[in-house]
Length: 410
Image (cartoon, rainbow, N blue to C red):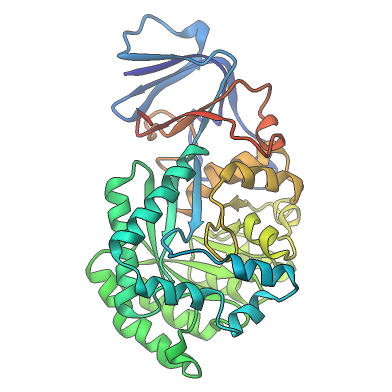
C-alpha cells in the first residue's frame, strides 16, 4: 500500500462518481484540505481528512506537506504516432498562408503521410513512446491516440499496431482511434468516393478483425470529408463495433457536430465554428463537446465558444491535439492555462474539462478522471503551490513533482 499524507488539498474527490459535469456544475470541484490518500493494488482505496486517518501500515509513505494531489489529466485527442516535424509549415503560417492553402501545396496531413510511409514501426514506436513520457511528466495519465497519417491500408494498420504496442508497454492508459478518413491521399485526389469505399470495404474490416481500435473517426469539415462520407464511414465502423468520434467544425460550420450527435459519437472535437444550431443538437445527447485550445492557438483560428456552450447547460472537455502540424505540444498544463485565459473558464471549470470530462471523452470516466474509491490510482503530486488557481496561472513552469500511474510512482 502507498499512503500520501499531509496533502494540502486533495482535488476532484468523489464519494458518488458522476460521468461528467455540465453547465453550472462545471464550477463544482470537490476537494479536501489537509488530506490523505491511500492506494492499494493500483486502485484508490481510501481518502479523507488527516484527522480521520487511523493506524495504517503502508509499504511506502509520501509526505505531501504544502503540496496538492490531483487526478492525472486525460488527453482524449492526440496524433502522437508521426514521423518528423513540420516547422517549415509553421513559418508559412506566420507568413499568412492558411491551413487549407498549405494542404493544397502538399503540406499538412499529406506531408506527414509521406514521411510516415517511409518510417519503420520500430522508429514510430520509439518516437511516440518518448512523446508519451514527456506528456506524463506534465501530469497526463491517459491518452487517446489516432491513426490517420498512413492513408492506405498497410500504413494505417502499421500505425494502429504501434499504438497497440504503446498500450502494452506504457504505464499510461491508452485508447486507439482509427482515423483513416483524416485526408484524401494523393493517389485518390479527385476520387474521394473511391477512397471512402476503401475505408469502408477494406480498412475497417481489417482494423476490427485484429482488434486494433476502440473508436472510428472522420475529419468532417470543409475541404475534407462531407457529411455523406462521414455517415457512410460511421455506419461501417458501428457495424464492426467501433464507437464514433468526429473531427468537426474546425474550418467551418460543416454539419460535423450534427452528424456526430446523430450517430451517438462519444465526442465531437475542435468545434471552433459552433453556433445555436450546433448547441441545440448537442443538448440532450451523450456526445461530449471537446475543444482543442492548442490547435486554435497555433493556427491563429477563432476560439470555440466555450462560455456559450457551458451557459447552455452543456459540458466541455479540453484536450491537446498533440500533432506535428497544428498543435506540437502534449502539455495539458498549458491546455489548462489556455482554457482560462483564452476561453474565459474559471479554474474549477478548466480542471473538470481536463480531468473528468475528458476521461468521459475517451470512455474512461468509470476508472479515471477523479479521485474516487475503486478508481485507478492515476494521480500527480504538485510542487508546493498556494492554490488550485496557481495551476493555470503559472503557465510557463511544470508544477508537477511526482506522477503515480496504476498506483506506481513513476
